[in-house]
Image 1 (cartoon, one colour):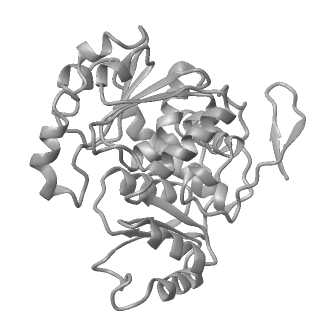
Image 2 (image 1 turned 30 degrees about the vertical axis):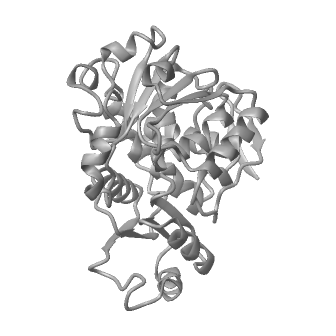
Length: 336
């Protein structure tokens, strides 16, 4: 049972959230309160370390194996610098550095890493590889990205929106783009905050039907609205947040011509924003290409993309602290 403190009371209050030792493979396996707890911890660490200049060596003596099958800017830097800032030792490993599933089975790799490190963050192609690592490892496994999900990106997105709007409940998110891993993670979590979701994808590029089925169940459970269309402007209608991502993910380069043709008309512009709510903002997990969103939107005050990128660091730090320590946030819980 964790202890937390309410601002001004000086008295501890109890919360049932305790994530120590857990895996983070998909946000589907985390409750609304558990995801909120991660965001609360991220906000707490950001304020204490960045704003107040405190030194918090919460991960001193701990090490992290960072397995990267796919290259990265934000995932690598946020994890490596964040883990080190908390006093831990991150170890960056590519497929050129270890025998991941080639000269050594994933089972054997998981058992070896469990004996030498305290946690693993893996950025891989197949979700099934993460599932196997989690099954065979005795330490927490964190999904740094897979073809199916990108949970740590979504935590950064939600922290950014909470900082901007002051709340999440009741916001409408409009996804305009590919039915990919980032969208899957939004579908698995937005309703848990009471957020509505409007999705536009071209025909043939819809999200995983199994994910959609779960999202529909969440929508009913949390009384939110979930809407799918092929019309970007229809999806943008009344939205507080316009979100997109790359149309061509790593491993899809041979599909470039086909995808660019299919996504014609999906570029987010100020014209798109005219259909959104008056307070609309823009998110993109980066790297960004101009065909996805034009410069006028991307570099405008409505774009939160670079705040979102920075928050990758504070949210992954919150994940690692929550999974590896008994730390409880010291600052007042934000309104979600």
